[in-house]
Amino acid sequence: MNREAAPPAPSTTAATVPRLRLDGVTRRLGGRAVVDDVSLDVMPGQVTCLLGPSGCGKSTTLRLIAGIDRPDAGEIHLDGDLICSAARSMPPERRGVGLMFQDFALFPHLTVRDNVAFGLSGSKAGKAARAMEMLDRVHLGGFAGAHPHELSGGEQQRVALARALAPRPRVMLMDEPFSGLDNRLRDGIRDETLEILKEEGTAVLLVTHEPDEAMRMADEIALMRDGRIVQRGAPYNVYNAPVDKAAAAFFSDLNTIRGTAQGALTETPFGSFLLPGHPDGTEVEIVIRPQHIRIDFDRSGTGPNPTPEDGVPARGVVRRSRYLGRESLVEFRMDHDGSVLKATVPSVFLPKPGTAMWLMLRRDRCFVFPAERGGQRGG
Image 1 (tube, helix red, strand yellow):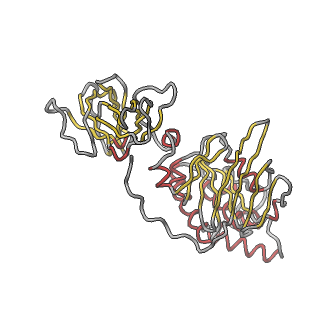
Image 2: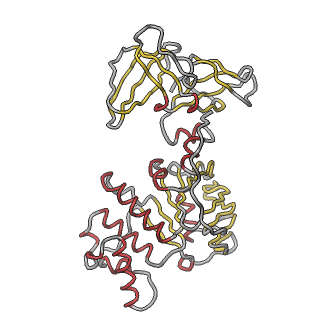
Image 3: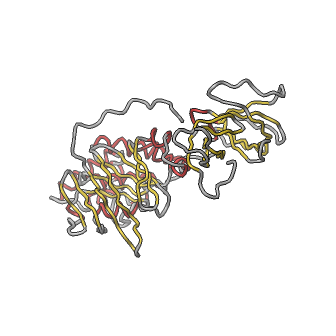
């Protein structure tokens, strides 16, 4: 389901050769494939996010690209040139790859200017000039003589960005570089960093386990699980057309309603749902995010008049409601089977426990997947 049309695709770069290409890259540790047959292209000026839970292989993938580790199979190319395979590996310092990490890794005994100049080649004057150029780009030219401990966390992050960009890398690898910042600073620093990277035309591979960060920054998301990329695409498509229930659940809470296919349909308390491609007898799960459940008071005893998009209303009783700032979360105990469904609504909406209400599902926002073994009814 979920047939809403996608927005127009952004214009792509004229380049036809990916700045970075991974082709069937595999890395085994302790007999287990921590990176398993990963293939990925990143174009110049493109931000691609490796998104997934801790331990899924994201950081190991960055280590392979940077040259800190070597794959057991597959190849890595920069601008069409082979830089790494199981048989050969270009030294890290020759790859033209920049690195940014969570802890900034600034040298405490060096000034801000010397931190940015560290690792640059050329004359002393040339390195100093390039360092100052990059500090001006991140609005820290007036702090060139300061030491890292004299700067705030956001300022240190910008110094780390300036240092990573100073050698003009072809690819920037970013391993959760914003997670050490408080929420007040994070959005502004991320936006500023993204703007500079786009202006430089650098291909960016960003690692994060935060869906909001991936949605905010990425041109393309590569969702990883157990060492493999399970889905790739623009943020809009990955969010609105998940390949399975786990992919959908990575971006938000889910409500789940179970059913059985019969004649390409399944009957639920919310009406019939189409199940094209599911043979009779197949157990399925209808999945919907809390923000796509429509709710109303039971004023008449018959429930509201549904629209075709909403389907048939089902009655539930408020179990709990919580105000979350931008929205309210309301939990319902459903009359038909005692399951719990969650709905979110904007602004303050805090019905009292025990209030009877009617729920309807946005059919165009529901997903249908084969049922997971041992799955539970309700959310």
